[in-house]
Image (cartoon, rainbow, N blue to C red; front, side):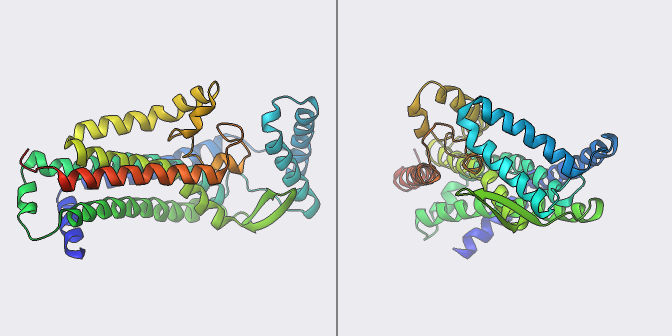
Length: 313
């Protein structure tokens, strides 16, 4: 298996597109950092102290809760109010926009670019073997088909991990160089109480949450590539759903409760942190189960079709 994965990585590393994708990711991180620095420098400074800002924010939150506007989001408002009051009582200043931790949290959106590259790689890693005619060279080797496909799947997974590692490492380096340290204290509101914690696990959780839809759509692209042997079809369907699926699901969920069984109603686990599920009554446990069901479905389809279909067909 190790030799198979090494062979797949050699193929990836011999493609100019791999280095283009790595370069684009690095440019995206640097560009986002420059834009953030420009916005921070041109945004001016706040005259009021952070205590006064939080007090003013609390007044607005209290008015929202008292008027009962949009009751569905009241739990989130109550949590924000409790955290602000905890900061005031314990003299814990929130991180401002010049903080390294704020920068690392905001730049997590670039995982979408990693997802784009992972989808492209997953779409071609199986279908490309058929279009190039090299699949028969793999099949004549005394290796089970499922091992060949598993090696490609693990290669796609490691490809995504490497690119996310590049994103995090470069972001941390630029964050240390260009931004203030800030406070490493992160406050959460759970079971009616505010709890203190370290911000690093929180950031890791944010990056994980942002990676879930990327993982599922990459697996979908891999499955389409293995089933239909068409990289263009895999890329087209996966990218279309990547950019449109979330919005379409949110629109449908506003009218129909059955939308909670769709893929994109369950991929944004961060909504549960804010008390804002796509469909009222959904829980994180339900979403995790749905994610595992979809993931298992994609894997089973890919392996079943690849191992049973006639390669010459």
